[in-house]
Structures are given as structure tokens and as C-alpha cells.
Image 1 (cartoon, rainbow, N blue to C red):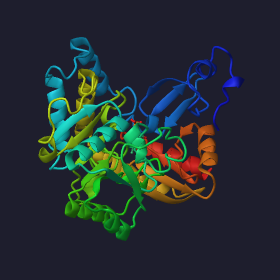
Image 2 (cartoon, rainbow, N blue to C red; image 1 turned 90 degrees about the vertical axis):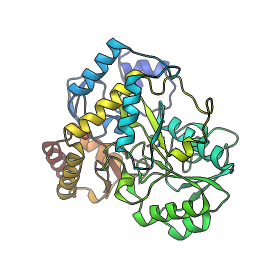
Image 3 (tube, protein in one colour; image 1 turned 45 degrees about the vertical axis):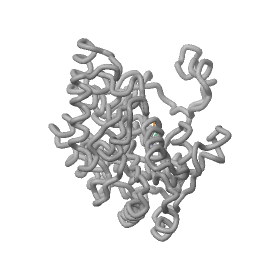
Length: 391
Ligand SMILES: Cc1ncc(COP(=O)(O)O)c(C=O)c1O
């Protein structure tokens, strides 16, 4: 499945990257040269239906006129200024994010990546509680920085790399309500969880488990952090996946789809936690820059103008109805963050689909193929996927 850079001509970017970048990524065997709608056009002229969206980033697909216009106009007007000055476009992005977030989350801190959003959330939790332990959920993924990776399942014994974690860490077995109640107490600064575990294969945590996390956090004054880096910004069929239950996290993180392809991330939190923060406690040079802010605004406006939450729910229903075929034995996840559980290795299914010019993702579960397509996906795309799976 993955390309071997040595088989390519010296001018091929795969051979050149292999000589100039760190050898840390397994790369797919094609080179995109442009993209439009939900299609990637490759250097050898293939047109590939993208059901992976660059790790869930391409919320509006490629070349969406509203996003292009917003970033072009903003670049011409003011490409960059830092948080040393207030900006109309940053204020508007924060206002719009707060408007779509759970009601208790009224404050925004802008950063650049999902890991950075989680890193700062964990810092806020430690600062606010003075506690030294953080709990996460088995199979969860939260990023590659020191604190975010410390709460990422199985990072410690593979790629963590640092000699120590910044705090004590333990993992609650996913969906184990009794363990949640037993483990969350007043020694715990924060519990971090993904409502739908993306890297794990779009595994949807049970609502009862999420409610138990929330209840136990409330009774021990522990900070509840919802990592919606992958599940947020409409991907679950609601703005945020926690909207499907009555749980209000103390902090929610968003990235990936947030800027539709312009790198950006944010954490949202409550008035109560915001009131504990002072000038200098957190910071970021690029976070909340004008270009990122303009992109965030364009993504939110487009989700609303094009009823993309409805679109996500309709496409999910179609996928559930038509794609339980061929190797697929079960479909997990929510909205357009779906895991197709296969009766054979997901990599084999991924390769077979790619031969039919359809790109899907894999996951940490070797039998789960992951779909993270643009939220603008159409019925015709679902039909193509169903036919390709059945072939
Ligand atoms: C749930 C979740 N949190 C955090 C991250 C890290 O985000 P980033 O790669 O932007 O640092 C990811 C990335 O896959 C993710 O899926």
C-alpha cells in the first residue's frame, strides 16, 4: 500500500522528500497536484474521491469559493498581526465559535494545532486545581506534544520519547462506568476524552460512560476536557459531538476542520476557568492570526449557509444503509467520522478502494477503515463507495 521512495524518478517529490525530510511518515502511493470539491487530481492524471480529507481537515472539500474568497480578501487586507493587538476578524471568529459551542463555553484561546490546544487545556487544568494527576481513556489519541502525548494511549511504550511525563497519568478503560467512578477523585486535575475516538477507528464512546465521566468530575471538582479536534465542527452531524448528550465539558478543543485547511486550533472554556487566567499565563505567536480567523469564520458561515449539519446526517444514513457490503461487517462512529469494521485487514480494503480511485483512511484498529470525508459529500459519492466495496 505505502509507496517505496526508491522506486521513483529522482525528480519525483516522493524520492526528493525521502532525501530531505525525516523518515517519520508512511506515505500513500500518489502525488496530489490539485484538488476540487471532493476529488484529488494526481500527478499521473488520476481523479481520486477523497473520503479521508487530509486527516479530517478538508471540511468544505477543496476550492470552496467562500473559503477561498475569505482567505484571499484577508491576505490582501492584513495577512498577520499577533495577539499584541486586537483584531476585528479575531473577535468575530471568537464570537462565532462561542455561538456554536456548548452554552457554558464562552471564552476562546486560539492556537495552531490540536496537540497545542490539548497541551494548553491540560496546563489550565493543572493550574486551576493544583493537582498532579490526569486521567485519559484507553485507545484515545490527543497529539504529539509532551502533555498531549502523555495522555495518548500506548504512546509511553512506543514513540513518547521524553524521559518523564509532566504529570501522573492513568487510563480509564473505555466505556467502563464503574472504573470511571472509582478512578476519578479529588486527586485528579483533569479527565480528557474524545467523544468519538478518531484514531482508534471512529469508536463512539457510550453516552452513559460520558455522562459518568461528567458526573464524577462534577463531584470531585475535576476539569472535564472534551477533545473534539477530530469530531468537532459539524463532523458528528452536530457542531460538537458532546451536543448529542447533556454533558457540558469545562474545556473543549477544536482543530482540523476548524479552518477548512488553514492551520488553526482553539480551546473553548468557561467564565469560571477564564477568570483564573492572568496576562502571560498562556501565549501563542500565530494563534488567532487574521488568516486563520478569516478561515474559521468562513467555515462556520458555510456550515450554516449550506445546512452542512443536515448534509452530514443524511450522508451518514446513506452510508449506513448502502455500505454494509463486501468486506464491511459493521459501521461505528457518528456523522462523517465513521469506522467501517472489515472482515479482513483494513489496509487490504484501502488498497482495493484506491485501485478504484477512492481514498479511505486506516486507523489504530487493524480491521477498521476510517472515513473522514468533506462535510459537503454528495449522495453520488456514497453510491460510488458502496459499489466499490461490493466489487
Ligand atoms: C482527537 C485528536 N486530538 C488531537 C490530535 C492532534 O492534532 P494535531 O495533529 O493538529 O496536533 C489529533 C490528530 O489526529 C486527534 O485526532
